[in-house]
Image (spheres, rainbow, N blue to C red):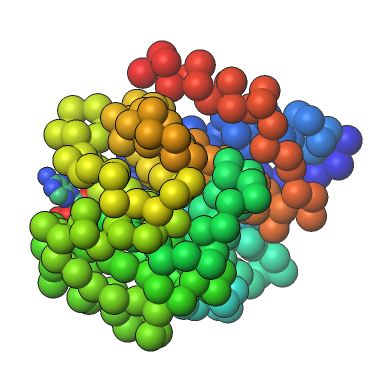
Length: 281
Ligand code: ATR
């Protein structure tokens, strides 16, 4: 066993629904790492840096960060990885020698999920259409640009929110109207839904897929339900569908690697565990 007594966890407010403990505990067991992964609520009114210092003193070597603290975490860290710097948001903290390194694995996790779920597809060489302009869209847009795409199209119901993301990307990004989403899907090799449409309790995403390019990859960050109406229609049309569990698992794997120095595998048994856990919602 390695890592005895080390602590990791997820910081948020609230954090009771996070699936991160399940993911990290699975990998710790698999790699015989004797550490813990706890849920760690931090009140938005608290002094965030002070809370992190208290965690480090208490044996924490790292943490994930979720809503509403990703920007607070960025401000509290002493140094940052390039993706975190690009986004101004941190989802992974490494606590070492009294210093806090802020990282963001969301974008690389998204790309890793596409590589695993749609291997040998040529989406990098074709235009991409991204729907939505919230926190997840930010990470995905930067990741797509970093992956070398030269034509990234973004639409959002509230166009001003999409325009606010333009400084994140260079020339590759163009912004269109929400109502033009089907026209803008023309020739695209990748469609990404980052809106909440299609989630349990939300309306379905109203978008025809006929204009997408041949063998396009369609991915949804929504994973409740796992098979959204969008993904089901994509599969039925002969397109390649990648569900939202991929990004969840791969961003976590990259965090785990930062803390423990080993990249854990995203395997079928882990996916099955998550699917079972989602079923118990
Ligand atoms: P995040 O958690 O990623 O920050 P969010 O801020 O809740 O997400 O954003 C959810 C996304 O779903 C937004 O892009 C939102 O569009 P607006 O910016 O116009 O609010 C989008 N969304 C939610 N409901 C929608 C609907 N009925 N039609 C179109 N887009 C919708």
